[in-house]
View 1: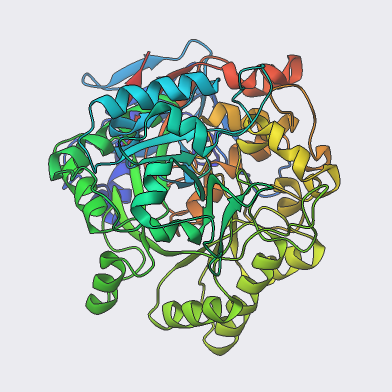
View 2: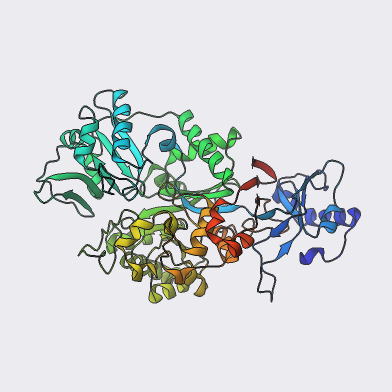
Length: 574
């Protein structure tokens, strides 16, 4: 039971406590401006896992009930204590034994929704299906305009003989040679183009690889269609793309916030964006369509980044629904695309991946952003890249110490030395939390020895590093229940265990996706756990993950979300 509710409280005693809280500033923080102290909502007969640990306890604090008023938790405790606070206008929810957990916070994702609504979804399982989808889109595309496909996953798609293989320029040519085609890998970073696109860009088989990029060629020196990392820049300004309006950007935000709250997500960190994306969030918020809380990163060198710097605005500016986050940089390739930059090569090759920022560029970026009081988030997957980022973090923190909590986005491949440096700098890693399960076939190219140190949630915890939960959607599925299963079992969809030494407990997984993710945005005092005074963001689950994990942990991803509440308001309900 809550330490603040060790005895039964009468309604009068509760009103007195609420008055004391208001006098101390809680009412102002809640935006209540006064009003009734009677709870607006009570949930009882629940298994409440708070993500809090009382001093001296080895298990997570639990309760049976909670009360909400003006968007905040005002009571957490026993059924008897909390039900005693109900008034005539209180919405009383009988959970019937269901489980309640804090709302999940996805600390790294890209949910602007524009691709989901307006590009060609290639989350299919055969190359023929890809051709059909591209051909249909090309038929409705004007000459000179692009057909853009996304969510293509090379390890999940089979060719004519039923064997897995990557698509090629020739496959896309069979779909169309009339308009340029670009197919993005689900993980981003690598792309496939048809011959028309290469022709329009003036790219031939004689093209040289640029720094930080690569054009794949076959044994005859011909372009295969695959373009990796910064080599993709050659297509900038080529052809025409549909221009989207302000209303369409708002629709994208509304679409994704609806989908993600249905999965139990109450907060997201959108890691990269510009002023159009920020305006879309503001518009969705004003229209009542923003269902989750947002910590919004500005992409490095974007119009938003430049504007924030000129205005001397940095991390935390905004309100409890929409805040300015970090400045986002990208220093190497992709884990799922197999281009991340590592000290040892991919299995059976001499390929170490691709570095997209030099160590000098990383240092310059960090020095500039730290000097401007920005929160920094650098995409760094490989161990070498992570080391370069830490070199820069260590330097600026030695010269200008502060509670920076600079982030290492993805932070995929680590080792004991890197873990100690991450801990000592107070850096925040945001490793993929659904990848082990969803992207299993890709780990063959890394091998089990590397996988023992990849997405190393357990090692981060062992080093007292508050590792945050992150899907990286679109690259990874965003569903937190899949994330719990991935972290608890380390199994892929075929049942193979990758890096079993990195398994965590259910309680640890819950904290990774709640209070740790709140810490990553400096918001641990207002969200991330079920605690009196914090924002009332929580999720009702139809099964207890602890019971499911004990019975059959491979069923964790199937736990139904019953209800998602953000700020005391229901954003999703079955």
